[in-house]
Length: 511
Image 1 (cartoon, one colour):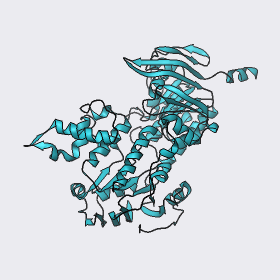
Image 2 (cartoon, one colour; image 1 turned 180 degrees about the vertical axis):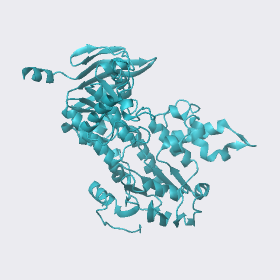
Image 3 (cartoon, one colour; image 1 turned 90 degrees about the vertical axis):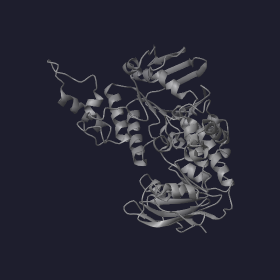
Image 4 (cartoon, one colour; image 1 turned 120 degrees about the horizontal axis):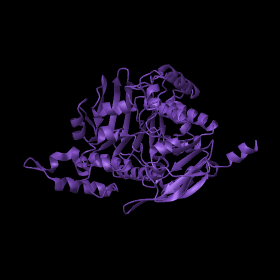
């Protein structure tokens, strides 16, 4: 008993005074972290705060210039990912890296399959062990299933099972919920809690503060390459976390002021696509942010794509500034003053290999040509103008846009569409995958746009964002608008009740 008590007092992992530079760039000035057995420890900070460098040191990808690392009280030096794995450290990245044409069992035991005396792989033994692992995690997956076709959530479960098969006692999860639906997040949290009960130390990196309070026991906050706070979750709240992360109070985080809306700039009536959404009707006025909320799969993005003309609709019509749109024609929508910032900026909003300037000017290339030739100088000038307005952090506008952080990529997509001079902006998941500081800048931009008279339709899965920024909330459930809430009426409880079909609050159109 005494031995167990003594061992429980030894941190599972302890990093002290870690420092790492890349040339003249100091990426980690003072890395300090303590992980205890059976604890979920949240690591927070803006992009560039030093989180990724710290994690790569723990994963053996980078070696620190100075500092010490102890695992179960023993000082270690990890010169490779293989050494980190052998030391019991596993990293679950946002996008798992698996072999799609192999089975779950083959992925988990890749490179270390059990063999018999003749060197033949014991596939049955491997599958039985993997099935036992999957059952222990409470998931309905089978060892012989091929990985191809599995969701990101299931792929993450496979990575977790692989870590357990390697006897990992430190699990690092880097933005694991970014691409998951609400039920998938809940399942992941249940798995994490089971791992915690087994004594695994879990480092959980997220931009979603509500997940911190739902899952973590301790929080470390980094800024400018160093730890600025280390405290139990019970001693923190959202306001204190935001203030420590970005150096500003929560009151200025959501800068949306109450407005007196102007004329109707977007009018949607009876929009229907069989099997996807039905009889969607609403208005959005000048100077107003209307939020389209609901669970993943409710049809929100599909409605936005149909309004813009990317996806077909079976019936209904859309007016922009009083003029009826030709449905199914995105080019006509742009000419009418409609802009759409898509949910997946990397796949649908950007050409990652092209320059920042080319991406920012892509929607107005016709204006930048002379005698049929595109002017790079004009591209750069336009990108520079929008970059200054949106506080874009980029040293070279001719560098590939894929080199930017997620928040700065979002600003390029936003600038690309603002360059068209829209009357109505549809923005789908405006802050997905970006850090708290970049979120505040995007919110400030949206608030500024509506002050200038734009109408904004915002689609978001983050309820604090919806409540903080929207003048009205339209909640969707199974392809229909189930509730319309004013800014004063919108609470997390009411929105969620409507999102699961348990509310009949105030249906209708804006007056």
